[in-house]
Every structure is written in C-alpha cells, then in structure tokens.
Amino acid sequence: MKSKIKELIKLRDERDAAGGLDKLAQRRARGLMTARDRIEYLFDPNTFVELQGYVVHHSGNFGLEKKKFLGDGVITGFGKINDKVVYVYSQDFTVLGGSLGEMHAKKIVNIMDLALKAGAPVIGINDSGGARIQEGISSLAGYGDIFFRNTISSGVIPQISVIMGPCAGGAVYSPGITDFVFMVDKSSYMFVTGPEVIKAVNKEEVTFEELGGAESHASISGVAHFVGHDEKDTLDMVKELLSYLPSSNMEQVADIDTGDPFDRMDDKLNEIVPVNPNKPYDVKELIVLLVDQQKFLEVHKSYAQNLVVGFARLGGKAVGIIANNPGIFAGTLDVHASLKGARFIRFCDAF
Image 1 (tube, one colour):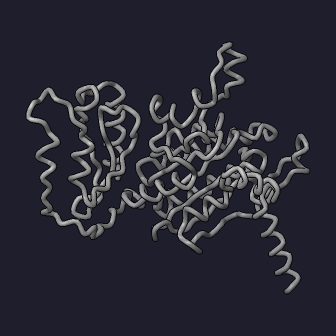
Image 2 (image 1 turned 180 degrees about the horizontal axis):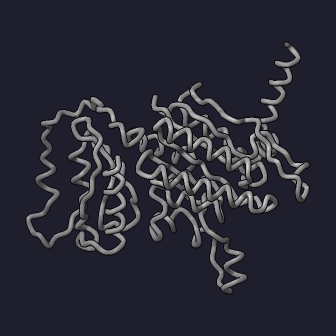
Image 3 (image 1 turned 135 degrees about the horizontal axis):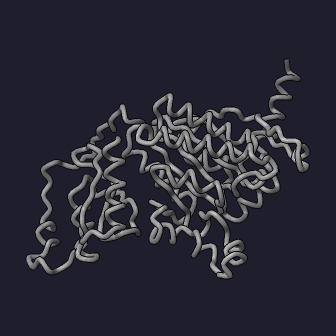
C-alpha cells in the first residue's frame, strides 16, 4: 500500500510540474502566474477539486509520443469563489504552448457539461497558441465541441473568459461568444492570425497591441468587457463580477445587507445634473451616488462611452444599470452604443 501511495504522490508531483519546473520558475520570474497559481488565487482556500488531472494525449505523430504531459496542458475542476460553486478550466502555456488537442478539448467539454448540468458558472482561463496542429482534424473537432457547449449554455449559465496570454486562432473564437471577456493590460492578446501573418499577406506592419491588445479590444472592437492592470487585478474583477450574478437562469442573486440606508440623502445629487439642458455632465457621478456603498462595476468601460452599463446593488439587491452619458456625444445612441446596450440588456433579461 505504501508503495502505491508513493507512486500516486510521484504522479501528482509530475502533474503539478506541468511543462517543467524550470518553465514554471521562468514565468514567475517574469511576474506571470502559472495555470495552477491562477486557480489557487481565484478560488476560496482548499475548495478546488481537480478532475481528469492524469489524462495524456493519444497522438503518436510528429514526435508527440515523446512529449506526454499529465493533464495534457489544461487544468479542469470545480470549487467555490466567495462560497459560490464555480467550474473552471485553466490552460497551461508551459505544456506545448497551451495548444488544444483531442484530450485537452475533451477535458474542457467535460467541465462545461458538468457546469451546465449543475447550473453553475463556468470560467475559462485562456492561455493558448491555438490548435495543436500535430493532432490535425482532432484538434479542430475539439473546437467544434466547445463552440456547441458555448451555444447551448448561453443564457442558461454565466460564461466568463479570462485571457491571460497571447491567444491566437481557434483559441479566441470561444471567448468571443461567452458572456464576459477579461484581459490583462500589456500581457494578453487576442487575434485570429498574428502580426507576422498580416505582414506576409497584406504587407502591413502592426504591433501585437494594435492588432489584438487589451486596449484595442476594450476601446475599439468591444470584445473585452474588463481590463486589469495585472493578472491578480483581473482575477479580482472576476470575483467581483460573480458577486452580482446568479449561478444560473433558474436562480436569483442573494440579497446582501450592505449597511447602506435605503432612505439615505445626498445633497450632491442636486448639483450634478445642470439646470441648462445643453450643459454636459458625467452620468457615472450620478450612478455612484445612487447605488449601495457607492460601488458600481462598469462593463465595457472604454467602449462606446456615450452609454454606460454595469452592475450595482440597490437596497441590497443586485441590479443592472444602463444610462445615457450626456458627457460623451450628448448621450446620443450610435451603432456601437446600441449594440453595447442591447447585449447588456439581453444578458440581464436571461438571468
């Protein structure tokens, strides 16, 4: 029995080493978190349960039979975040660049199926170079299975994507159709093809930031809903968002005693909205004064700023807020603001 336990401990250590202890140390030296670090930071202490941690790929082509890693480059499981059950998958860039192969995809699909069955949110921590081309069509089929789960889960359970590194190709399609996308400033990127391919095909030179950086997706494309200063700040925002969301469309968000009196008066409200209707003002100043504890989680903060959307609490109840912002374009609705507002309203309506 003792020999079996020692063998299990050895396997666990090998699993936790991922692509190698040296690679994990290099990431930490650069100020980056590992796939396992991210899960440990995100979840409540001692609540995370890993599933299928000893799976390996089945490919024997192009030398892959010599490169087998326990877990196949993705950590999957469930646990609690602020005492709420949440399912997660976290891709490991130290294992074959976080590339998605057949078994890697099956692990993700399994955790998405479990989340849907349990009626709990699912979080994808994405750090992947895309499809594992050595596995050919099996990798692409895996993406199809993931997209299908994204579709049937839409409006049923909250789906959150966290982009933690350079994600390219198939790795960015799934996040694009989830409910909320988080990115890290200056370290996470989303693009179908990289700058080198753009240069080769279009003879156009663009930087990583211009093509798929956090600022570009937050302010221009609107793909990113939240941008964090660093990885921990980004994960903290994920925790905050979850506090406003139900576990599924069959549940309601629990009321919280915020300690903010419902009949609280604030004389500043008399000063924000000007008497002159042609004078602009920032509607966010008004929102912050109205909501409990002056806490307002703005969604799409840098995109279509003529419309403001986000989450807050009123009388302890979680609410979605949408407001024209007279300080930007006089609060008028253009196509971008309309799409921003419609998407937010659809989400609130579903949950």
